Image 1 (cartoon, rainbow, N blue to C red):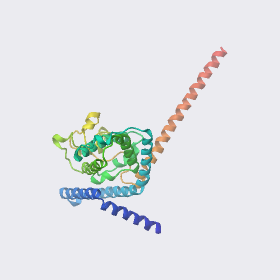
Image 2: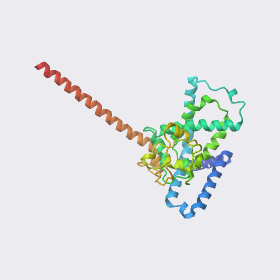
Image 3: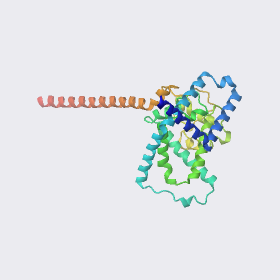
Image 4: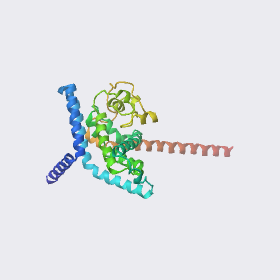
Length: 306
């Protein structure tokens, strides 16, 4: 009983710390504003369907599980940083950035982060890392909260990519901090359930329509619209696809929608399945090789007999 009380107390302290952080206050206020707009636009009953409530509850549960797991993930990411430091890769001198205004440095930080996010996102849509990212795509009711439906291991992939792709830039910490807040706010925004396409700015700034096509559960949309902020990255690398308004279903086939336990274990379950498949193929290949070798030896014996 004491352990449960300690856990709840610790969780409350975490929430209090989050609430006192100005950056988090900004994000929470933005979420509440989007919620109010959604209610005003759709009406209370439509906004809070049973399916939407189940989806939001699952997302919040995953968010709290991540609070518990993040310290371990952070320690692993620090190990990756230590390995990176051992490589002795030179970084851009801080004097290069000294004369630039903060707003420009913030913009550069956002651009660099989105470039890194494009590539870590693209990698996570490949076979062996898809089980990690699939949790984010499991949400059948994509909205602002979906931003926080991510597996803890996805954070490790993202932080690792930042270490590899961004550390050498040596951008000032304050610029990176400003960029991070804007990135989170925009990430919440593109998940909102509205059909906004940004018109002539659609290739410059990612819109909810752009990102809904990324979450669309149809084969033509798989692995498309991978940039979080700048769609021109998708245009450059051949993954841009916005055929119009997105009215198709959200989610991912074969991935549990709101089963929190299975979603938390999903990467391990899928990696075990993929490993069994690979082992089966390997055994079949070895068996076929052995059979071919046996036939070859038999043919040699027959020839010698003649």
